[in-house]
Structure formats: C-alpha cells, structure tokens
Image (cartoon, rainbow over all chains, first blue to last red; front, side, top):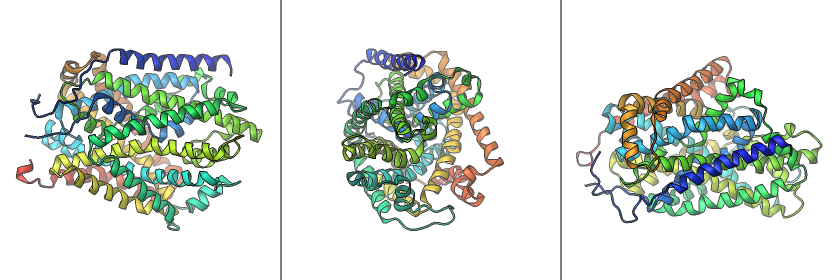
Length: 43
Length: 491
C-alpha cells in the first residue's frame, strides 16, 4: 500500500472513530425504560 | 388519549436507525463511487456532504417526528392539513423502493443456498444472468417466471413482516442481530480481503487520493448523492422512528451517531471489497480498474468468482457473504415497511398487525412482476427514478417546509431543548440553503440527462412506465390517500 493511501486510511478512521467516540462521551441516560407517551403534552 | 408505541431504550432506536441507513449500497455502491471519483479525495467531499447535508437532514427528520409525534403524513398534517399529501409522498417513495429491495434480498437468499455447493461453477455471470434471473434483453420482453426468485421473495416478505410484527417492540430486539451480525461479518471479510495476495494493490486504487478530482463539480454531486442515498432520509423512515421516541430523548447526538456509523460502515465495506478485487485482479493478471464493479454485478458475479478462488473454506465464506447481504438489507427493508405501516396506522387508526400485514401483502404482490426475466431491468429503472427524483423532491420539500415554513430557528430551539449536543446557526444555513440548493442541482442535472437520453439506453416506453409514470404518481397517490375520509372517532 502506498503512503498516501495509508495516510488517508488513518485520517478517515480517526475522524469517524473520533466522532463516534465524542458523541458517545456526551451520552446521558435520556430514554427511560418505563416512560410512556400518555403524559406528554403537545409542544 | 393515545398510547403511541415507544422504543424500549435508546440503543434500540439508534441501532434501528443505523440498520435502516446501512444497506446493500454501503457494500456495492459506495466503494465503487469512491474509487471512480478520486479515491481518498472523494472521502473529503463525502465528509463535507455528510456534515452539511446528511446529518442536518437526519436531525430535521428525527426532530420532526419527535415534535409532531407522528409518521410522515401525520406530521405534515399537523404542520398544515393541506401538506398531508406530501407526507404520503415520502412514505410512498420508501414503499416503491422496498418493493424492489425485497427482490434483491430474494437474489441474496437464493445465493445463500447456492453458496453451499457454489452452484455458479466456473461461470458466475451465466449462472446469475441466465440461470437465476433468465434475464431478457429488453424490459418490454417480460421473460420467464422464476419460481425460486418468487419463493425467495415470499420468504423475505414473511421475514420483513415478522421483524415488524409488534412494531418497535419487535424491531428494537431484532436490530441487535440484524445490525451487529453484519458488522461482525464485515470485519471477517475485511480481514479475509486485506490478507489475500494482491489486496494492497486493490486498496491503493480505493484509497489513494487524486486531489485534482475535487475541482470537478461532478465529484461533489456524487458525494452529496451518496450521502442522500445512504442515510435512509427522504422516505419518512426517520420521521416515523423519531415519532416513537419519548419526549425527553436526545435528537442531535443520536443523528450524529447514526450518520457517522453509516459512513464508517461504507468506508469499511470498501476495504473488504477492494481487498478482494485486488486479489481478483491479480488472479486474472489485469489492473484492478478492469475488475472494479458495483451493484448486483459485484455481489452476484464478481464476488462469487472471488469466493470460488479463495484458497480455503469457499462454501463457508460464500454463505457468510450472502448472509451479510441479507442482514444488511433486512433492516433497511423493514424500516421502509414500518414507515408506511405507521403512516397507515396513524391515518386510519388500524391495529399495528393489520397495517403491517396490509403493507407487507401489497409490497409482495407489487413485487411479483419483478420475479420474471426482465425483473432486474425494471428494478434498475425504478431504483434510478425513485432515488434521483422521488428522494430529491422529498428532500427539497422537507427543507422548505422546516427551513422556511416552520422556520429553522424555531425548530432549532425545539431541538436544542432536548439535545446533548446543541446545534448552532450552521444548521439553519444547511436546512434553508445548502440542502434545497444541492437537491435542486441534482434534480436539474438528472432531468437534463434523461431528456438527452433514456436511462441506460432502455426503451423510452419502459423508462416512462418504470420511471416517469411512478414519479408522477407519487404526488397523485399522496393526494388520493390524504383525501380518503377518516372515521370521526379516529380523527
């Protein structure tokens, strides 16, 4: 594999995996297992 | 008081949405488009398209469903009753797509069985086009009825209906298998692909950036087209899935995770495909450019050839490859079905199973003409027109409705109330300007091409019935469905 292909492979993987990692690090438990829509008032 | 079904948990929603976005195109479309448009340089264009169009549109659709608590027609009705037809149009684009998508899954089903004995023998091309499909030269020559494709179609539709049997309850469980299994299989095929002799040459073709290509507008259009096709936007799926989220759910972070996972899968798919193509080219003693392929030709002709030439465990790799295609396709298929079922259920207050069975039966019956010899040709025409016209029209409509009619600023405020990552004014710019502009340019370019010459040289009559007629019918059917009276107690 040539150098530019290797660089591209690494850069793209870092962007995708870094992006997914960043999103996962911001996760908060927001969907309750027991929550229903009955008490949801319309916006 | 309505009891709208909701996802069991956040993982179920995210996996279902990722599963919907990841499909056959990630394996057989993206790698070839990337290679054709500058290799590694195309990835830069694709990332720009992802962040300026793909993810903003995902955020738009998920939050629209979440805000309106309804499928596409219901959500549009809530915005303005006169817009309900447009919501139906989005759901119908997905419905027409799932009709032929199930046929491709039927091919994969047949090939899973054929892999045990490598039934394609020394001539995979003849086995696919002549034996399996009985392909005719002309779409107007319908050809022979193929019982095995019919059987595969029936099996796939039963599978689709069962996967959505209890709506989000079933989907939320099924996706743990149908999303994670193809990922695991893809990893196996990457390892297998890149360790084959000649693989590195294939990867060079895939990844080496040809930077001057970025100066060509066609490369940017290809990048935006790829992102629009890949993310399952424009079919009402994400609106329906977003509507099953409880009120307190995050919107933006989920959209980013879905968009990034989909693109990562496509990128990884390219490693598996081009590794194997490098091996294939070395076997034939030709450059990789001569064996690079896309679409059904790649999956059902080139890949079986590669599998037959593997040094060991050919039947196992054959079965695993087609199981991977089936599992990649199934969640896209049932998400499109679910989007239509949810629309029918929301509109006419039917029970989920009734709506599900009705949509499944309609999809199966409409797919029967594609079981004949000319099926692949008709499928190709419908695919082109639904994606290039149907999807683009829906994207333009959605960006105008949310960006200009509701107001992107107002929508952004709503989204930020629920999101772990806040979006700024960049989202307004994407939704109000970039999205409609890009979709209009793509639509204009396609209209110009189709006026110049029929798609793939098909007869104009076939192009009319498989393409233009269906596109014209989208808004007409939408208006008819919106006009059907609803019983008073179900309004």
